[in-house]
Image 1 (tube, rainbow over the protein chains, first blue to last red):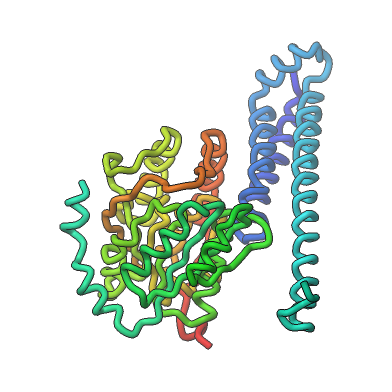
Image 2: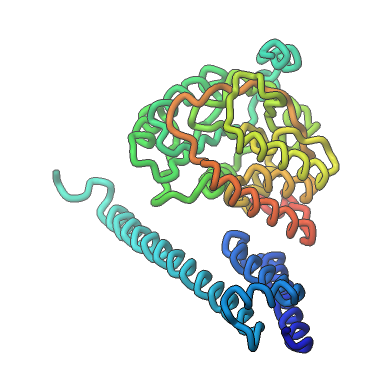
Length: 121
Length: 261
């Protein structure tokens, strides 16, 4: 069984994560779109820390007999990987869009300098 | 059902007379709607040639922008797809910057019938509402939608009605009319995905007066709906989260004078 202090600390930490994410959304520093995965992370970790029997059972499935909270760490790490992967896709999209914006800007500036005629066709 | 909407709508001539000298604009968001955007522009003109029309092309890969420009609409071409919220807000920015008094939103896919504009314009023109939304109350109004979308509409209607303490039946309708106050608000702040739901809540929180009127919507004339079942669930979660968090926000009431230049 998970030592009680570990469960309490984990529950407090995941609850704090939820509160911080909520406040970031409320103050408009984090968009809902990018907050969903964080909220899922916080909720799952909170559930696993509070539901100690469940954590034990899950640890059993994976043959972790000695120290069930290891599962908490594993689940946490898995979610962090998911968040990072998600951000990688977001950054890729942003950088594509950034390229398009820069190109559009260059074309517009050229148009403004040389008038609408541009090079002869 | 068509008769119901026609009976409750004021005569077009009366609305047209009230429009008078108001500077008015129709915002038409369009994504790959080459099949329908030309007709929509024509129908808006047929209702009232006094409407300026701005088509916001949300990164189409077809001839949407070209057709709209040929029909004499102002065309804002977004360099890439921003999603419906970003596209619509671009239209409101345009309306705000150019000092329009009144704006209507009409989808470029042809599902909104410009002949029904009098219904959504009347409450705004009479000063009863700052924002008026056309609602397809029932399903049997010539508008077929997928099961997931119907469930979504119901859930949103319930939640939004509770939050704004006013009966709202169709929160996902993008057929709407707003006055200068609404234009100023939406130009400054507009939500992203499924934006109509949040925009409705936001308007009421900003002390804008909301009215819903029944309209009949048509089948989409062209293009393909951008919403699939799985995405619906994702969006629903996201929008419900946004509404929930929104309950804990404080809203400033927009002062039109401050915004005017």
